[in-house]
View 1 (cartoon, rainbow, N blue to C red):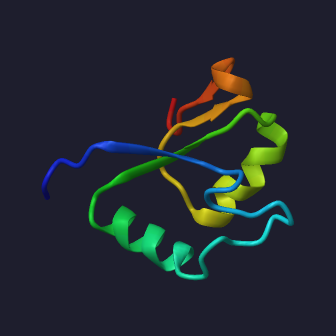
View 2 (view 1 turned 90 degrees about the horizontal axis):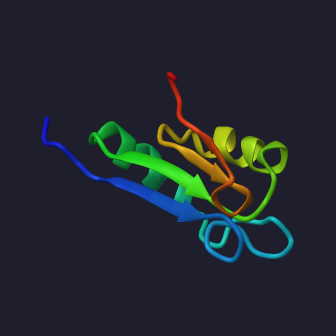
Length: 78
């Protein structure tokens, strides 16, 4: 397996629109494919951890979850 960099994606207006609907219906399958290919994908946002956690799990992310403008960081496995 090739080493892949970490990608942190913003939630609001990037993954979901103001109504919390996917901005692109292909996102879940693309995210699964990238993780299967060895990428580490996480999320960053100014929102609270409790709000972001459901989206993190919904997308099946495997990288860090950076919340509240960087004041909270969750790293899976630690």
